[in-house]
Amino acid sequence: MEHLLILPTFVLGTLLGHFYLSNHDGIVVVEESFSTNLERVGHSSESIMNDLEARIDEIEEETVVRSQLNPNRDKDNTYVAALYRAIFEEFSDFETVEKIVGLTGLAPNTYGFSAQFYNDRVTLGLSPYNRRFLNKVEVSGPLDNVDDLVDQLAEGLMLENYPLTYVSAKLREQVMASNSSAMVSQSSKDALEEDETQQLTKRLERLLFEVPSEHVDDIYVTMALQEIILHQNIDKAKDHVVSALKRNEMNPSARALNALFMVERDGLDAALTEAQAIASDVGWQPSVYMLQAELLDRLNKTPQATKLMADAYYWYPQDFSVGYEYARLLMKQENYVEADKLLREALRLSPRGYRDHISAKLRYVASLLQGFDILDARAAYERSGYDDVTSCNPLSVCDVKERILQSVRKG
Image (cartoon, rainbow, N blue to C red):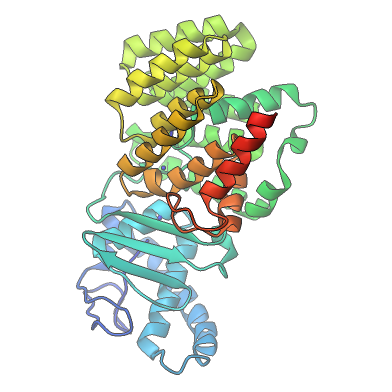
């Protein structure tokens, strides 16, 4: 299931008009209108410019102090760094930032941020010093990605970005635990501080009023996932799902979550009946396949679930979540070699957009760890120090995988 993101730069003194930058010190030649791009990604440039300009002045002053350590950094670059940081602070959701960068085709190389052009894509790295963004995160995506603002909300918290088994496991933990706070691992707490989750909540609440009305149901689904994954609050999540279904009773993600809620209330068989109804109503989408496979697996019909996911992978080979679920079921039946081949192939086929490239890496690690906590996987990913999940350097994913598989076989 599943996908989280980046910007423009200008000559000193030009913010709303066209800007031109020479290709020196890593700044790519570009000509674009910042205000136009903001409008295209769903924001009014006028409404945010005053806030940005004030913040830019503050950041520029502290950036100048830092840049004195680097005599090669000129004033234009100092300004660009300040501008970027201000926009990142305004748009705390990566996907909006990604779209602005994608639209402008800008690839800056400034203090605290690094980026590079290759073919028709742009990649931006956030340096570890900026703790708001959970260590280093690399983002890449096609330059023509101008999808609706709601298409990859809140750093990949859309249902398609999380294996349904992950969401389901979170729900099961919460039902069984007497103290929900005990379920949040320390690494999760460290990785995602409370003020960040509050910022995310406020951002989502604002989006309810900013996006076109036909997308409000998707926002509610995202808010439900946030409550499940980040806050462990099932009751609030249920309320958000109800709100989503009121807006659009055919929303497949909302219905899939509702079916998971039914497990606790009405049992697995009733939930499976609802999953079959969803398939009849909305067709065999990836989330529908994965919902039914998850329920069949929990009904101890793992071979049947595996066969279903094999069919899903045939139709959706580029959806990494489908490959992940298929591989997970193979691993559950101790078919580790086939699962490993499948995961590598699924990763290779995935588009190099944020949703399928970056979160895919994290889920790849999570799958090898045979766990569901994506934040823990992120921490493991950072600690292991490898750049490419398919490489086998010391302390690489191959090393981690082999140790885990050995312990599984022994256990």
